[in-house]
Image (cartoon, rainbow, N blue to C red; front, top):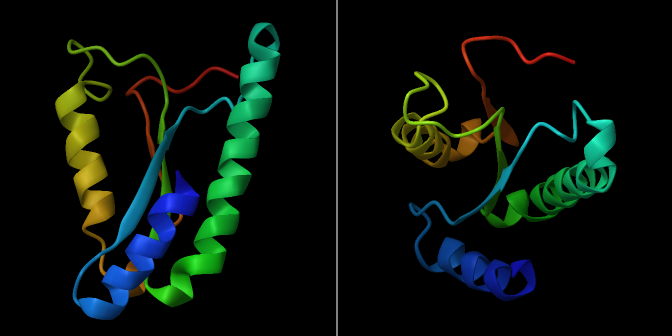
Length: 116
């Protein structure tokens, strides 16, 4: 997908300098807190993070924001932090960052700390 999207986003950055061409990827916290029973998925999520970080470093100078949205648990409408509306709001805030303030990632965490 990145091979298809990035040239389009680069072109948009040139044509419309005030735009915010972005490729935002969702993730979990398995890259940071691996679970032995999900070893393969944990490896995949770690590799995904490295890929996103590499792409971000490569294309930031071209005006393309590539970032990672890590959701720290199960999405549940009853959860004050991990419900779909809050996740969408946090994602929009991440997307709406000014270019000079672009960050690599955000972590959307539950009120209760993640147990490692």
